[in-house]
Length: 201
Image 1 (spheres, rainbow, N blue to C red):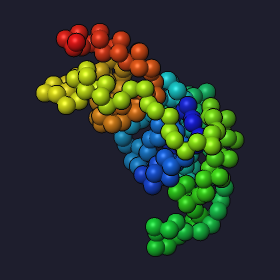
Image 2: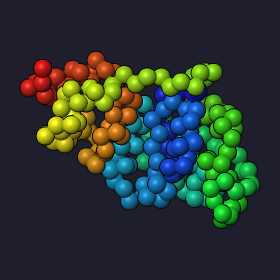
Image 3: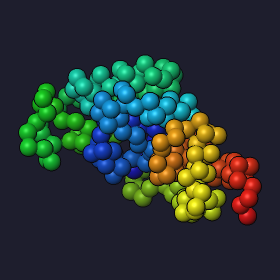
């Protein structure tokens, strides 16, 4: 298991699934070129870059570098790290034919090669033989306790919290939970919620 402090930016959901098997980090997808027009996701990436830094891990083809260069222009240079996978030709198991350039994407590269790329990126990471992920401090029960989920006004309270933290309004509850664990401790979360939602307890 690799624990990475930075938020990792990948292209698609299959890349995210691949990394989730052996990397403990907040993983955000660009949805391919979708990030170019998604102002909310750009705002999220900038926020994460400011709080924790981001690590870009895109495919080694032309499209991957277009996305990588776009992200380079979105956040300050000192807030972004890059992990590069080598050019390995082949076809992902789930696909009927190779990609346009014939190269394997992140989802098709071995875990060892990806681990080496992350290590070489200069990102803040710890390597462990354990495959058990570190337990998150803030959990769904905490969101429920402060009325951020499961309640009549939960959506409004989540919007209030996201506005307070300058997070994108379209962020889902699950992504909000992952992001909270990336940018603050449980004590900080409790203090903020106590200030915003003093009707709780």
